[in-house]
Image: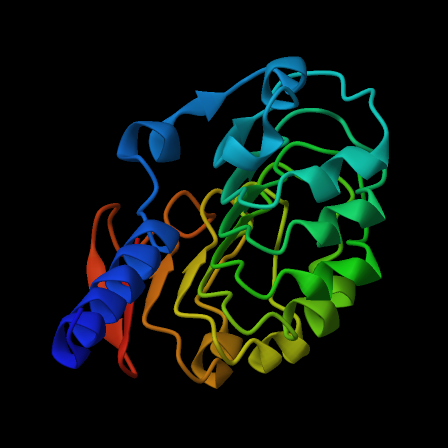
Amino acid sequence: MGYFQSIILLVCASWCFHATAQTPVDSVQLNKEYISIEEALKAPELVYRLNLSNQTIQFSDTVWSRFINLQYLSLKNDHIAQIPAAIGNITSLKVLDLSGNDFKLLPPSFINLVNLEELLLNDERYFSLEENIPLLSKLPSLKTLHVENDGLEALPKNISSLVHLESLYLNNNRFRQIPLELNSIKNLRFVDFHDNKYTLPPPGTFIQDHGVKIRF
């Protein structure tokens, strides 16, 4: 075999190896939503979406570290009194729905969710937005935050520390006017403000204020 033939074979072998190593995830598997923890644990590395809403969660915290590719997780309406610290092990998470639970504070391990882009904290009876903001401010990818129907009458002053936030959902709270604190959120671009306690402007109205688009 000649020198150039050997080089060509080596290049082809290298290309084949990298092509195999970087095989994209099957789109069907990527969009498949598991609704049973038992089913998901059969092959946790293949689970990208896990919806455990409206369930009673009764399993060891150690299972979370097995979902190495999980991108979407819903624990909505599970009445969890304390979010397990092990949730911080799911570092691939992009969307997390913790709405309708009974906890007040997020665990310190939450700062490990460096890829989390959207967090839903709707319908919370005990959640303290002000006390959790120092932790949320450490999430470098968090761009969308939902705190809908949480009984909010005002925004805490420290909300300005959410410097990566672009969209904020304040629907169905108890605001009587637009919180001035919105202007202090550096990268905020959109606020959903409908179903609060004001009378004007009419529902469905969009207003551009200081570069922020507000839906009433």
